Amino acid sequence: MSDDDLIARFHELAAKVERMAEVCRLLAEENRLLKVSQDQLIGERAQLLTRNEQARSRVEAMIQRLKSMEHNA
Image (cartoon, rainbow, N blue to C red; front, side):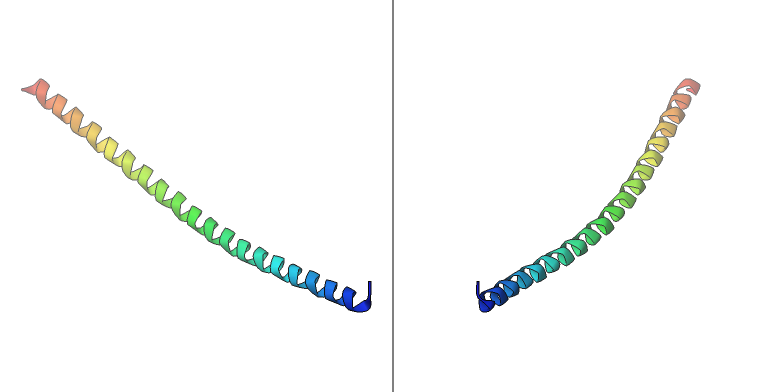
């Protein structure tokens, strides 16, 4: 291989390394955004579970009041 061939090969490899580094940067940013999104979704899920439990408790309390009213009637 001539020196020119080696230099050309080196430049090709350097370009590939740069492309790979850019892909890594993009994937790291995408991963960061996905983690932020996941954290938000986990928070929303927790809020929904809390609201669901509160609603269930209110419905159970209403049922108990209705049963009580039925027995008193």
